[in-house]
Length: 131
Image 1 (cartoon, helix red, strand yellow):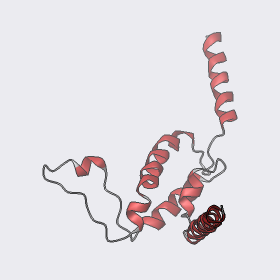
Image 2: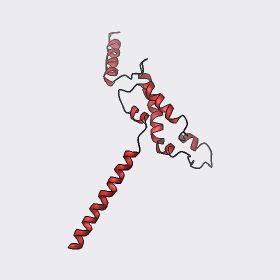
Image 3: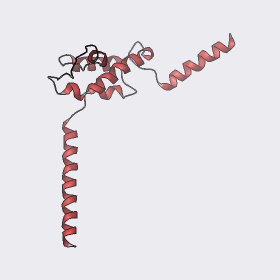
Image 4: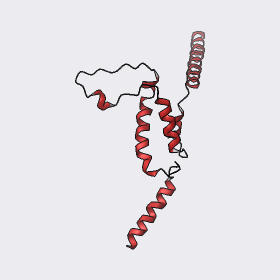
């Protein structure tokens, strides 16, 4: 019985230590600003693109799938910068976001909200019904 209590206490101690180490690692790894901006509905489009371009200016960009399979004997590329594979998913997500959101960008960089898009759609629908 005493062995079970000691084992349980040791397990809790080790689990707590591992959990705190994981939290400390997350605090040290600050997410780039452009990743946060992409998820912000009030972001200025031009500021987000500038932040993205500034971040990747001197870094090796992730490889696209079409580039990997272009050559028959291509191997997975080793990156010189450790942040390239770390943010590869976010890089591709931002490229897609930039293309997808572009039609909704105003001249000042503001992105139309969902309510504004709905109002435009309803207005066009009314205009079509009257014609």
